[in-house]
Image 1 (cartoon, protein in one colour):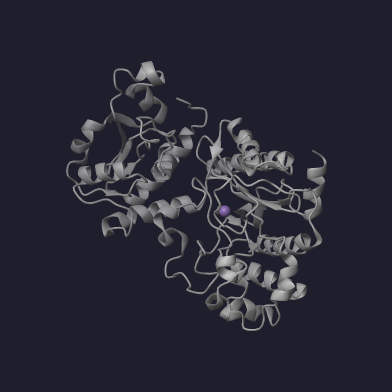
Image 2: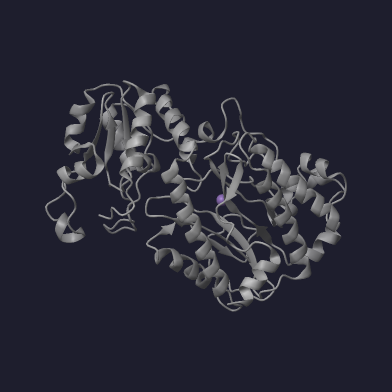
Length: 459
Ligand SMILES: [Mn+2]
């Protein structure tokens, strides 16, 4: 068992904070079960559910943390006789109790510890564990709308996890540094004629070498217009832009998330450069606005307005930029949200949906460009967010007469045709909100067009 990343005092403090919010109301926190790999009996490497990881700090398969209203305890499956043979010796319950500072008991004792009290819980990420939670608690536990009993637990965890403690911030910095190194390796590995998968390998090798993994499936694609492109088989060609959206996950579970878009040849074409600079201006304007008290939704407006002005400047669109945003014309080119929370999950707290990521009383706007926005809270020092505007030529949007109706005669397709060597551009950094503004945790990675070209030349 790798204990190198375990921070006992941070976990002690987090459990104490949660306990003080719960009072005498019991709560069951599930780590989740390993997920089967293929159809044989193997499993993916186990990664504990983030609420559990936040409180207990270790990837303990099938563990159940219990706040019984009075004290914390941890219930674990008894190790099978051959575990030490196949997967190496593990600390016994007594040793683990010492490490964690909580009582560790066999899972078989959990029903007794629950004493049929109505305990709150949150659905684990895997179905198998949800079934076990249902059986332990005598009610159906599944993802979706939370029962009233579970709401105070969800709200307490949201309250705690929205604002990162010093250990969390250190974890995010570590993930950011590894992510910067990974992108740098990808930049250096980029050559015309190679498949996208070779660049992906260079990026992920940098993470694996640090005993880390990825916080989501890397996007490494010359088809940046496919927003969640998970194919890696296309060959890189001179003249292509390569969109790379990849992030580290540290051993302790903290996520990195960065996107860069660089030219395969090492030089942006004049048309690529024009649009790249617009996305960069939009991203920089949104990043610059980050400070405590700012409503996150306003960043969508800042980025969209900058893109609207840029499109008018290039003659791709005409009319008043603010109206182009309001009427959904900018969303034809920038159809996604400007970013999200980041923490132990890359889309942090997403398992709790808009309850976590939208401030109480706020709901999703139906407007194009806003309906995909994952976050609308007022920023607080200690929150971490991404800022990631983009420009894409998505055929499913631009070739759809119904969807483009909002543009009227303001879309200049003859002019747009000159920019056909741009399929997708996105620029993304991980930003920590600080007391007096913000800190860009991934600022070390080249972002300006000239800086990227220069970094590619020096390989
Ligand atoms: Mn992101």
